[in-house]
Length: 470
Image 1 (cartoon, rainbow, N blue to C red):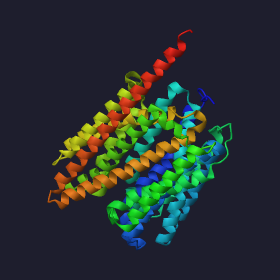
Image 2: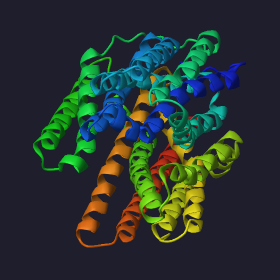
Image 3: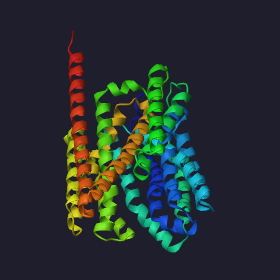
């Protein structure tokens, strides 16, 4: 099915989609500033806090591919409405929770809604915009991620200064309610016209496999990579995902068509995205420690000091400057240029031992590079997947981000711990971690650019051969 060209209300619909997306993103970042309040008022232990955060991440990451497939089959608008409703109900339960167990369960329920929202929003974008406008639309969609990253801690800090901890969840309600009304009124329904049979075994295997993989990555740094719980979850992840791949290669109606991995554009974008999110996720994790432990900023001030990164992404994508640069440079060059800027920014932060000026330069470079390369990478992934499977494509894109970010935090956190154990100072250890992240980001940019360029040349050659009269 060809993409719907130039829906007359496409930009208004995009605004509605971004509003729905923002509810999820704010909740991801706002919880971090509430940890002291939760510890004090609910008597939450360190393990409880970890599960409040991880229950959401595990459920969401495990369900991303299944949620995308369900959106393609049953209707993206229906799943978007369901996601907003589930997220709203979960927010009410979380805000009124009286025990840590209730809050953890509510967070898991919100993870189901979050998975539906993250997949359906991007899938709808691909349906309502013509191909020539998709890069700019994806840029705006991606910029909302940065907006949530920047404003979440600030909103959370304000609410906790004036209200009780439950307000950080209840603040989702008016946003979700407004988005729900707007979705019902404006967003067109779209789904796979072929109506493939549901791949229930594939859904089960992908959910268990991805949740186990993310749990392994999350638990490794805390419990040790050789601990029983980490080894068992790792073995389960590898085994179940292998079964998932075998199953998907044999059924006539696969949730994820493994033939996609024979497409150089797809494999290039996927490989690059994993390395880029690996470097970015881990390096930003170290950045928060750099600001607080080295430069001695408080939590709220540290959040304000990271805002230039997100605001740069928002400005470049909302104004369309990043999309125009990508159109001029071409996808592969835009990705390589952007990732080189991000790597340079990480190196700047790695050597910024004293003062904020060099760190600010690094943040601006990271923001510029992210605004340029992030949407180009997402568009490369989505454009290789048939439009009627846009939900699955969005699920793949989300899975890569979850896995790469989690792995980056785990690995670069391990680099930090190893350097500290060897007697290095904190500044030096943090710098080493940032440098490793920079190498991963640059390598991801090079790999993606090379594979995408080769795929483009091969496609052009095929088109020329087809055009030659016989």
